[in-house]
Image 1: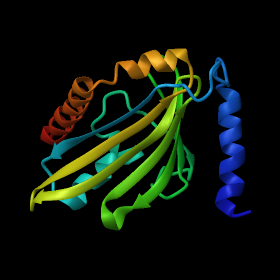
Image 2: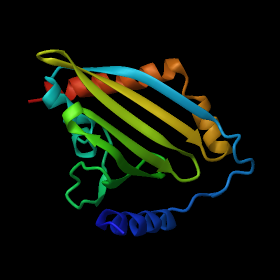
Image 3: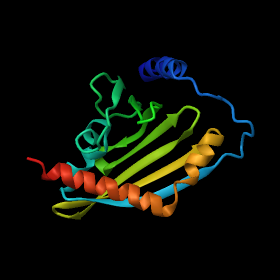
Length: 179
């Protein structure tokens, strides 16, 4: 077993055990809701400086309430296999794993699970819009894990998602304007 697997598997099991899902198996497996939403966020920074804003630690600089807890590695640095957790405003814990870490391509993909609610991936691909600005393409691909998750994902309309990413854009711009 690789050293990553020897760390990640027991860690994931412990995190899930500490935050069990209300119902670990849906009543009707295979008929859960699924959404895939893609949109863009403009960032007024060069590509090399914008991309790190979409890491666990980088997001801390602009996202209100974002407070990731590094599980591995301890310093929270981004790497394939890195694991962190976040708590939502509702107290639910979301577990995150960096699935693909490609800084040379300005791309990262996360697996995320909020037990009892939803699971899926979040992918961010950045490209230069100019020498001083970047476009981040953000794709959420989520599946519900319960009836509550079905209802939650029903709110993830195209219009809602555009507003969600619009909030990101405004929050990043506001953070960049601070001294």
